[in-house]
Every structure is written in C-alpha cells, then in structure tokens.
Image 1: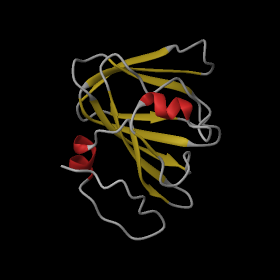
Image 2: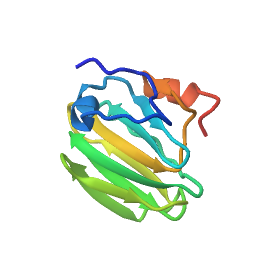
Image 3: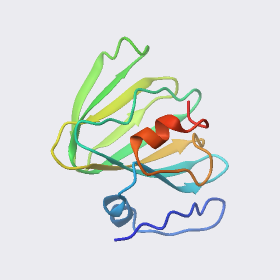
Length: 140
C-alpha cells in the first residue's frame, strides 16, 4: 500500500489506520494535525529506535501494529526504570513529561502509530529516515 503523505489535519478524514501504518515505509509520516491532537505513523528499522524523548504537557498513545520492541520510560532521561517488551497489538500510554523510547528488537521494521494530545510535530511532517528526523531543526 502506498501511503499518502498529506496531512489531512483540521478536516474530516477517515482512514484504515492499520493498513496505513503497516504500509508506511517512512520513519515518520504525520497524517493528521488538529488543534488538540496529532497522529503520525512510524516505521522503525531493526536495531533503531524512536529516540529518547519527552513531550512537555503532551500525553501520548502508541499502538504497535507489527514487530517487536523494548519500551522504556522514566521520570528522567538517565533513569528509565519502566521497561516492557512490546509487540503486535500492544498499546503504550506515555504520560506528559515522561521520558520514553521504544527500540526495535526484531528483525523486521516495527510499525506503529502514535497519537499526541496536543500536536508535537509541525503539521505535514514527513521524515523518510530517523536521521532526517534528527536533522530537522523543528524537532527537539
């Protein structure tokens, strides 16, 4: 499935999120940015990760569609005392201001979608690779 890289935010939109997520080949594709919510789909390569991060004032929901990984969270970036293995159909709930990361521990891409409450990325953001995300001056 080819993923439409357009951000449909602030307009009504219906999509099969599972097909969109599993068909996404980009590290990150922002598919909908509203005033108080944002949805991105991600494809994390084996041995890569989302990247250790914290979203100030923003709760996050992550749904794993395919693959397996290690989820880590903690109050500080050097104390990730919460660790759980994650895989197909798992949901991860990240409280606002919580440091977190998910590392792909499998041998195929880890396919997931994430919902930010409120938006965390610039509307329409597409990062074909993790390095593109790291090089983006709009990312933290």
